[in-house]
Length: 105
Image 1 (cartoon, rainbow, N blue to C red):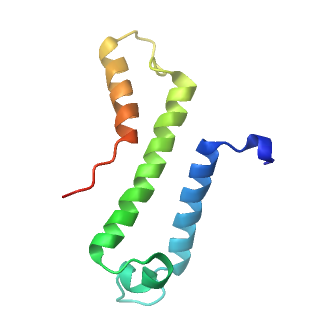
Image 2: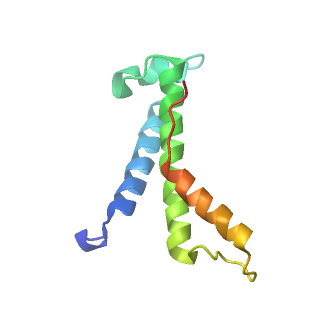
């Protein structure tokens, strides 16, 4: 891949894969350890809540990239033989929802 092939979509996907790879290589090194007990030095993860936040962030990145790729490939019509407004609405809703993140209170 050269510099002309890299765009923001590619960069986000690469970063997401790298973060998952680093975490998978660090954890679990020993039995009976929680993820945050191992990853605290590398990722500033100190609690169960921090761990869940990191997992949600990684999932959000992957879901957003998947929704964007699908939209760019198929548009709102999707890979279907029907011209259904309800399906188009759900596809648009899914795409827009993939960009929205609300921190749990």
